[in-house]
Each structure stands twice: as structure tokens, then as C-alpha cells.
Length: 458
Image (tube, rainbow, N blue to C red; front, side):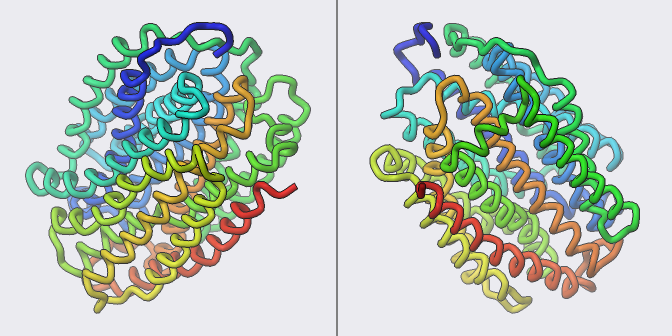
């Protein structure tokens, strides 16, 4: 924070970022529960339905990295507030959508606003809190994320039954308005030193095109055009890497990744963890409602098991990571996640609710052990001047992992179901696509364990 003096009472700052951190996952989790109702109203296929989540995440992935650099230059608090306004407006417009096309478009802007809030919020906490309290503060902030994930399915199910899917989007607007007020009151005296530099416009453009082509093409990989877009995205990533390596003011600090093993491996572990797990709530929301015949509220109550465990363990492991090597805790979390994913690969139409709840709780424990310590490990691996970009890279790994996760859900569903809508008649095919997901990502999570264990080795 340079030589600038910060407020001595820090909890109002943390409270404000926690409110913002709650809304993003709440929206994601609540919307997943309302997907069958969206499908029913707009008569869309399972493939199109997956883009209700994908569009939000794609915008997140595109915006996070450039915004983290822009916030370093022009002010993190300023971008935090801008993100709040964008998120609030397009949450309202999402709820008022009268076509699936309009809904997907509004979700793109909503995702962009959420990206601004998240990346700047974590950087503000890291900057304001001293190292001996940082893990605890980050743990509480991540606890707010898990609280959103916890309440999302439960409240989303009840709200969907009461007022339909549109009310789910509208339900977050009052909370967003409250957070806007809190940001103007609690962050008015937060003075974070800006890092003078030139914003990398060309690099931002190359990055955005790369992400879009890669993800959009990957979601249509069953078509020849999709394959072409996917390959073009990979090629653009190579061009982006070469350009950023030579750039004096890059949005992606290549040297930070190539010279800091702990930082790089911690981020790779995060990418793999979110890739392996994010699609679970989407898959199980539809499974519970179509295969088990549960109502949205009942399905939401069951899905509560995972984030409920997360919300109780994240603050504890965050504080523990201030005293114990965070890599040990994060690695243990990845191992627990692996066991949960293997168990989910054995789901069938006859699987009991108790079995599903037990595996969701186990997955929640894996998340709780991994996320706070891994975030602490990432942020503690860099100097203060890199907090913004470090937070941006870490958030990008999270969102890119989530986007890859949903992209693969779309691919597996398309492989087995084509453009059909999900129904009780073809639920067997849907379940096969879910098993493919769990098998592939349980294997991938083993690679995440290796990165996590190796991060501190010379």
C-alpha cells in the first residue's frame, strides 16, 4: 500500500467485500436450480441450457485479467464500485428477459460486473490486512463465497417454486443495492497506491479473442466449425503468450509465472481443482429434478450439503494457513476432492439420497481444505506491487477452470444427446454424460495433487 495510511478498523472493509463475494456464487448456484424452468419456458435444448451458465463464466474469464491490470493502474476501489453497478443493472435485466437470447446476452454483462467485483475485492483485502491476519481475512471472504453457494440452491429452489426463474435474478438486486451503499461508506477512506504504467490494449484484445474462440469453439466441438474455432483459439493463445513475453506493460506477467514456481504451481492447482468440480452442481441439479423427480426446493436442499461444509471449514483453514504451510492443507483438500469425484462416477438411477449427500459433503470438505490456503499461498508468493495482477491471475485460473468444466459438460451432453431437451425419457443418456465428466475429471484431479505437492520444491 506504499506509504499511505489505511483505516485502523478493517472489519467494515472486509464486510463490504464479503457482501460482494456472496452475490456472485449465490447467483450461479441459484440459477442452476431454476434451469428446468428456463428450459420449459423457452423450449431450449440441454446444450443451449448449459450456456445460461457458460455465458456468465465466459465473460468472467475474458474480463478478469485485463481488469486486474487496469485496477492496478487506475484504482481498485473505483473498479470494485463499477463492477457493483454493472452487476446490479444486468441482474435486473436478466430477470426481465423475454427470450433465451436476451437472457444469455444479459448474463454476459452480469458476468463482466461480477469479475470486476471479485478480482478487486481480493486485492483490497490483501492490501489492507497485515500478513499475520491475511489468511484469516481471506478465509472469511471465501466463507462468504461458500455462504452464497450454500444459500443459492436452497433459496433458489424456494424462489423458483414461488415466482419462477426470473424471480431468482431479481432476488439479488436488493442485496446488490445495499452493497453499493456499503462500498461508498466503508471504502471511502481506503487509499491504495496505484501502480503507474501503460494499459496493454493489444494484449487485452488478443487475450479476449483467444478465450472466446477456445471456449465457444470447445462448446461446439461436435461441429466442424467448432473444431476450427477451438484450434484458432489455441493458436491465438500462442500469439498472446509471445506478445506478452516481449511487452513491457503486459496484462499477464509472464516472468511472474516462469520465475515463481510457488505462484505458478499454486495457480495450476487452482485451475485443475475448479475444472474438476464446478460442473457438479449443474449436473446434479438436473439429475435430482429429472431422474429423482424432486422439486426445485428439495433438490436445492440436497445440494446444500457441499457448500454448507465449505462455509464452516474455509475460515478455520484460512486461519490455520497462517500457521501451517498452506501447501499441505491445499494438497489434502485436492486428495479429498479426488475421492469424492471417484464416488460420483458410480451414480445411477438407483443411487440413494444419503449416498449423494455424503459425497457432496466430502466434496465440500475438499473445497474447504483447498481454497483458503491455496489463495493465501498464491498471494503470499508475490510482492505488494503485484497483488492486483496476482489476484487477477488467480481469479482467472478459477473462472477459466469453471468455464472449462462447463464446456466439458456441454461437450459430453452433446456427444450423447445431441440437441435434445432433457426429459425423463432420455435421462439414461444424460446420466452417461455425467459419468464421463466424473471419470475424466477425477483423473485430472490427480495432476492437481502433483502440482500442489511440488509447489515448494526447488
